[in-house]
Image (cartoon, rainbow, N blue to C red; front, side):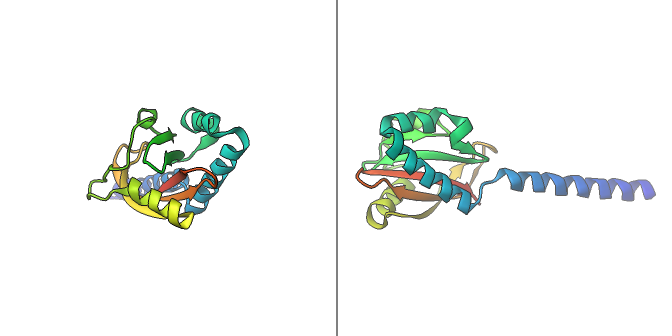
Length: 154
């Protein structure tokens, strides 16, 4: 009986530790917003084309935990995507999540009308490879028809 109790305690402790580790690997809303704002500043500093390349390929600087930068123009053309380079150059305006939500269209609407804001949808988490609830902070690049985004998995 004591062996069973020790096993259960060890199992619960291990599960608690893995849950804590997972929580540390997930980005927060504040971190997502800060990374998106840094990405907008990077576009202004080095120019759009160089920044798009950096966001897509420079994982050390533009991927934090499960956060990554993506950029769409206001026609829905993917200019950069830190998690899936194959999306770059594709028009995503009609892309829907598993519930039928046209989230790229909504992101563009938020960025173009309000300047910035949050959009909720479901998307595949590159870390878990499972579709999860996601909220993305999108911000317009002033002087350009671009929406920069970074999302958190909820």
